[in-house]
Length: 73
Image (tube, helix red, strand yellow):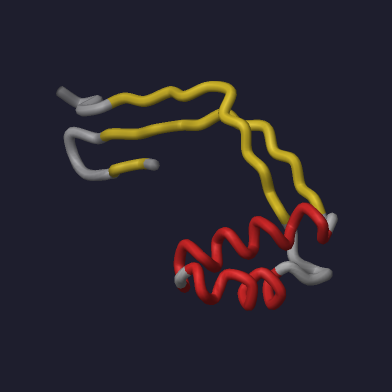
């Protein structure tokens, strides 16, 4: 995140990622996201639609956070 308007704020995340194409890992997360944005009643539909070959599950672990508010003050 970078706010380029004075007095300038930013956040930098140092992360590790793990990328998976394993459909057994991907489908449940696709369903959870479908439930969150489309409603629980459509979770299975979106899990099946989006948990397919060619889609990826990206897990992010935050190792370090650097943030500064009002840098120019």
